[in-house]
Length: 406
Image (cartoon, rainbow, N blue to C red):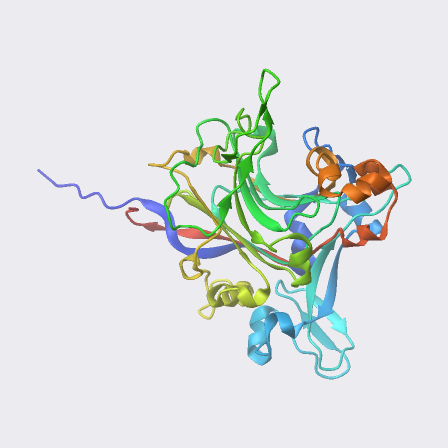
């Protein structure tokens, strides 16, 4: 009688491999521009425009700027600058090559430049501002999602977000909000939105640095107000004891989004979605001098692909995340609550969240203009702060290996 030996299954548990590099001139090739009004659920006071219109209005573009050495440090020279995708300009005219092979002629002497993606808004006669909503072409069921950000939309009436979802199958296939700001909020948060049977009452101690968001003052079915303070640990979007579509939410320290983040020159946001190892984690590193050395080197060498000199990100070396959500086998949240999702960038104004909170978050402006929408119509100078400035988005997935997972 022969003996059959069965080894461990092949699973995505190996080192992280770069699967999508979004930088420079090719950044927008990874997305489609949604064209139309905001969704009925969000009701943002914006008109999202197509790629051609966004280009004509100059609210979506790539701009090359001199490297700010206070961000990267004085070591970004010579061979290391080429790892980053920068080329020094020797002489009066030379070629600058970004990390995805785009070339640009400059007359900058010995200066080095790098590409930044800008997305903003513009006023209209009708009132709602023209804005940009990018929807990713690629679908994901896991991954390490990294955003190198230098400025995010901030201030009263703003509601920007970078998130993962599958809109036609929401909330069945889930939603993960990686970066979301509302009015003048200053603390980062990660929120999960699902159908029933995904709760976070089993988060181990000592695995995160952040706190749970709370819900209080929620109306009951009989019209009374529930004044108890509850931690937002149920990801179900219709949990009657949390705010509608609040989901399960963990927050970081103050100063990690909005105006303080912009004052620090931005930061690096990371989401690790790993259903095999049974967790979703989030980090924010701001300013850029706080980025762990492994992550910094991985970003520098992202354009090297699988070359022997490339550095792969290893989140185990970065310290504790601010958010930790157990998912998968042995947890209170099956991993199939999250699947077939794509990345989205959008800039909403007012709407069902920022608009509803406008009087509370921005009382002086509400007193002056009466409503959030009237404030937008006034086209004040504060609208100049409503823009994204992005160095790049980097998506990694674990390689497949035969291995037993504990």
